[in-house]
Image 1 (cartoon, rainbow, N blue to C red):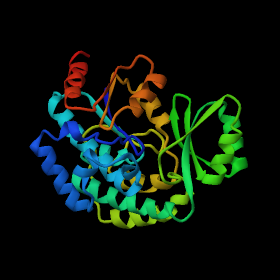
Image 2: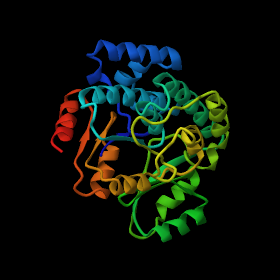
Image 3: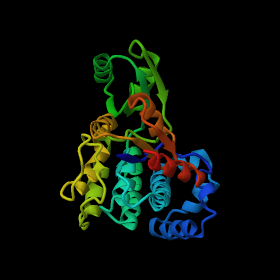
Length: 304
């Protein structure tokens, strides 16, 4: 099984879509989705600076659009019978759901635009943020978070946990972190995947209420607990994950249990293959950051 992994917010970099725009079809898709979302995805993917694309309302549609574009290019290059599975980290779950045929590309972008705006609005209520914590004992980290009124938002595996909460509390945590840990502030504008996002869940639930999801065409793993998604729980998983922790660690455990042979991370790639190298020892990976990387992915699958 080869996993197509879709990254989440924080993976975007200025100009990261530039290598893909030689394709007229890619440009047409981006222009169509720009009209659908009300966001100029071509400009933000090629010319906007880091501060601009860190804005939650821009970052989320931009990342999902990039993932769908690179995912479609990858699928076209692989054999029809290749043993594939899909998974996404946080907002990347929308990318993965579209590539697995559970929802349409347009529905994925429409919902993510609403999700991004709703999460930005929720973030504006109280100054909050996120930080990555590397290393340390999980029990000690849990105690420290409880003391500071913080939350574990992403369990990323490989010794990395992302924490979230009010900025003052995060600052105090960084000043006196648990023994054996390193704390790195993240370029996101809110405490995602925590109770601070409850209002965004309500908004997204209403927007998604008219969807009729299909059964996945490839195995599709959920951030809820690493299990496989069905048509019955696909939409509820996408909606309520906004305010609950991302369990990417459990997704990787499921990949390993199900016999993963390789991972291909969609653009903007790097974060998830990095986690895989630490948690899935010996599993080959390919980061798809330009069309040239498609061939490397195809060679990996063909050589298995």
